[in-house]
Length: 438
Length: 190
Image (tube, rainbow over all chains, first blue to last red; front, top):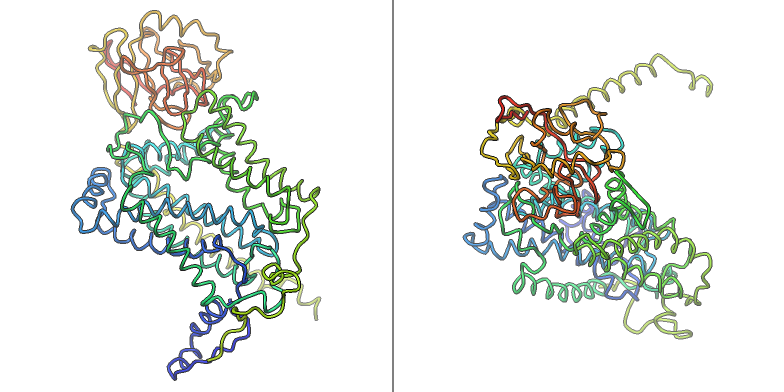
């Protein structure tokens, strides 16, 4: 941020005094009030603001919940019920937090799909994109540890299954995986010790997440926002000041999103959870069907697609390792999108072939999500294997090849032209690019 | 001037040595922060349990806890022992015994999974080697899979009556914990 020339003039003596010592007002004015925003942003661009709001909300409700929660194997389950029943407004704050996690992922998935559709990952936004993938990884780690805390059956067995993923390293070097898993557990099995450290980390990670979000926004403000045409800002009529134009649009998006959020919180708070998690953790009984939260299902389906064979290829004892590598690769591969996509056109609006593959990719992700919720047997396994291949082919084959063979549609000359039509350029009627002078 | 500046000086040596010393010192301070997460002394202390097998009739099974893990003990019927013995080890997905009481490269014969003279008893760590679920098969009416041993409900791994993986994603046979018979009807695990 900063570096741009500014016509910020502090109006009060105190403002002038502060500006010479900590130019925070200057940064806010330059970066969040006058900041040039493409004039053609659609509602998909409101998800950045929505996500910021959810992050703040999750931290606020989380801090409050921690005042009533007991991170011990004997106290955790009861303290959650205590929060739901006894603590003033505890039921509401707890629902805000647990539903908030789902809403967070819902919004972040839309945010990422938007980025892929409009080519927001392409130069010069590679670092912005990688920071985004990092944020998603941190979100996943935080959500996973948070889901442990109620200490129900799904919590307990979810942790058991996921931490055991690391034991796959035993097939590379005998004992390595076991050592790591026991280090994570602080014992020979998941126990209250594990719960306690996960609570500590669940409280820490959101603050690291916030730090990366600051970097994400910083990188965004260096390169500027992408927009539905994928064109760069070329003339002053291409943009409007962030406030009040983008901010008011964000406000509409946020209100609509909050309606959905509130509907879940107040009417179906447990709809996205599992009934099994209202049974206290029991290390001797595995629930018949372990399923992660919905937002992990596509990745879970990829993990489980690797049984003793994969599409007829025998994997033997490497099945587990392959599944684990595939699952992590499914996230990591997203970070390489800027270099895998060979097309110089950003927006799929002007890419007739890529557009279809994009929608097929969305279908692949939704299908994997559905398959992740089904038991790992019969036709579900085969379907998971096919869609796993489709998932990776989108990044490793579709992105590089389509860019080379596709003839893009004609691009408008500028954002202004895309909004006002050819020859309709010139000054827009309402949206002034320069800040108003008062 | 410039060639002179590139020559290593005594000062350069001091800078490199000093920084390296500080780096090693800082890195060594990291160890306590890592080591504190490993199993603590109170966890390590729960190292052995004694189990009385007398009440377990043929065909029955019991589950006990050892180091926070379930231990499956099954008194196998004669047909179950036979079916476990008649398996060609070469055809198994994991052909190692995985028995803590034996050297690590012993083959996964049924004899190597049990203790001589007590072949009807199979003692296993009841944790699926795939992702750590507790397989079914300890109580009557449980699904035991195609091979009559144990069936993991999470991802469908199937174990035979010797606890060896036969089908599904698990990479290894169920582990045999370190144990010994203290009398004819008592074992000590750990």
